[in-house]
View: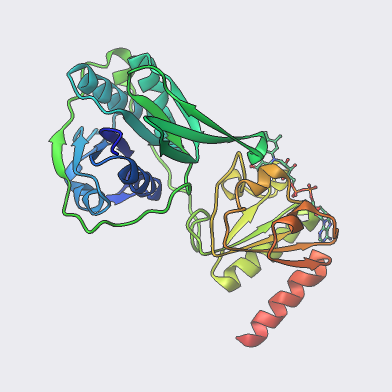
Length: 321
Ligand SMILES: Cc1cc2nc3c(=O)[nH]c(=O)nc-3n(C[C@H](O)[C@H](O)[C@H](O)COP(=O)(O)OP(=O)(O)OC[C@H]3O[C@@H](n4cnc5c(N)ncnc54)[C@H](O)[C@@H]3O)c2cc1C
């Protein structure tokens, strides 16, 4: 049975809809027979892709012309709800943009947010599931108020799927007077330069940890990743040590990845790391300690020194051409 209309906050870069948006649409469709999107931008740019993933309508603000998106989108959603729109829930991705909108919306609607959602079910109303204690326990939470429930959903919690539907209809979402927050402008933005596949979208990820010994040895990870067409990743220990940027971090406070193959080299397998990669289809661990917890989730374990195993692996791959 449908829970009622669900709104999904759509995010896109240069007209390409973010994978988290498509993942949330897939789950929302399971729960509701009317799923609509809200979008800070020109709805025509995203209507086809959102419609193909099951959105019936996209409520779009139109071009934000350099405005900081969060205040404008949250203000517009709140105004639409005061004006009579009645979604039972608003799903936002756990992204910088999604968190900004969810927080502002919570204040504007005087409604609560449930964060870190990895599943949503219909149990006579929407119930969100979030992992706690590093993923060892799951907590189910529902809203008791009759205001729209705001859920912040973790990337890679659901699988995106097309429905074959036509383009979503585009409806104007008016931005009200935002007061001082409406004056905030984006003056510059940077796209992080990186070669190869993105960490959270790569089919193969090769991650290194403190077992590499020193920052220069991360080159072994990068060489192997380049050879396999993979994205390099890292444990928090070596991000905190300044060996690699935060954008490489896999885990509870980094990125969640679900590649076909995840290679963990010199990573112990702390629960905070595991929650970010244990959904990978095949996990290969290289660690010199046979008792390392990473072997508990590994499909294939190599007990050995990364400084010996990784060069041998590279040599074998290079020999193949
Ligand atoms: C709130 C919170 C959030 C956190 N979020 C994250 C997160 O998002 N991601 C994350 O990764 N961590 C996170 N952590 C940190 C986490 O608890 C661990 O400290 C971290 O994952 C350890 O990184 P590591 O495995 O590289 O290092 P270590 O735990 O030090 O493990 C190094 C491993 O390398 C092996 N090793 C050593 N030398 C070699 C060698 N020559 N060859 C082969 N193996 C070798 C050792 O046997 C050991 O197993 C978080 C912690 C907290 C408290």
